[in-house]
Length: 207
Length: 207
Image (cartoon, rainbow over all chains, first blue to last red; front, side, top):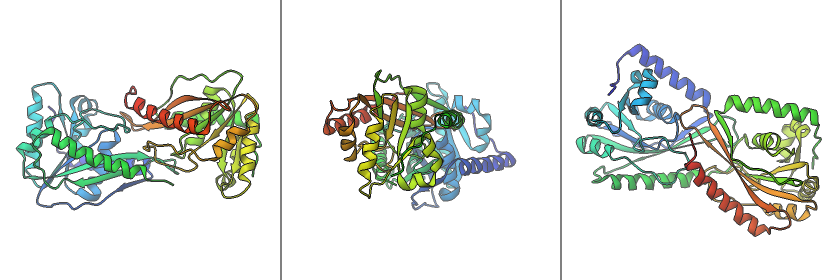
C-alpha cells in the first residue's frame, strides 16, 4: 500500500491548487454547519460520484472540519496520480492481502484527535443519480478498531447548475450521534436514510 | 410577444461555435441513439435544470435531429439576450394574455416539417434530481393547435462527472408519440415514466 508522505512545501502547493480549482470551477459550495467535537478525530463517510468529491471535501475540511486531511483511495488512482499522497492520500487495494494493512492504518489515524479520514465506502464511482447506496464491508473493520475515538459524519454531495454556467455543489452533512453500529447493514441503512433526506431536500430546490 | 427572427447563416455559425464551446467545456456529450420520424416536425420537450439547457436543445436540433431550431424563452430572459432572437428564440410571458399568442406561434412553426421547437414543460428551473416532471397546461393548448404532422420527443439531460474534472452530459431521448394522437394526460404520464427510465439508465451508463 501507499502511505501519505510528509512534505510541507508540496502540501502547501496541493492546498493552494485545490482551493484554486474549486474556486475556479464552481459557482458556489453550499453545506450545512454541524457541531464538531474537538476531542475526537473525524471519520467522514461520503457518496462517490466523481473525481471532484475528494477535492470538495478537502475544501470542506478547510472551512469547517479543520483537521488533518487523510483520504482512502484505490491503489490504481494513487499510482496514476502520485502527487495525491502529499495531500494525505493512502491507498487500498481491493481483493489483496494489503487490505488489512490499509484498514489498520486508517484505524490508527483515527486514534489521533487531530486527524480526519475520508472514506467512500461504495468502493467505486457510481452515478450521481443512484438511489440505493451499497457499502463494502471494510469500513466496519475500521470503526470497530477505533470505536469511541472518532466522530462519525455522513456527507451527501450533489452538483447542479441552475441559472449559472458553472455548477454549485451542495453538501449535506449529518453527525451520526451514536457510532456503535454492529453490522455494515446498520451503517448502510443509517447512511441511506441521510442520503434520502438529502436528495429530498435537493429536489425541493426551484429557481 | 417577440417572434423569432431566425437567420440561417447566423444560426449555422452559432451552432458551430456552441459545439466548439461545449466540446471544450464538457468531457463527453453522449446522445442516446434516436431517429426522428421522417416528414414530421419535432416538438422537443426538455427537462429544465441548468443554464445550458437551451444550448443543448440547439445542439440536439442541429447535429442530431436535423431540424431548424426554434426555442421558447421567457420574455424577460429573451429581452436580456436579444441575439438569441436571431438563432430562433421567441418569447412567452406566462403572466399576460399574450401567452396564447406565443403558443399559437409555436404551433404554427410546427406545421412545417423542417422545424423543431424546444419547450421546457416545467416552466422553471427544477433540480435535476427530481423524479417527477410537472408538465404545464400550456403544452396541451400548444399540441391541440398543431395542424401538420409533428412528433413529440422528450429529452432528459443528465450530468455526471465520474473520473473527470469536466462534466459529461447524457441525453436520453424518447418518442412520446405524434401530436393529435396522444392526450395531455397520456403525454404527462409518458414523460414521467420516460424520466424514471432515464434516471435508471443513467445509473448503468458506461464511464
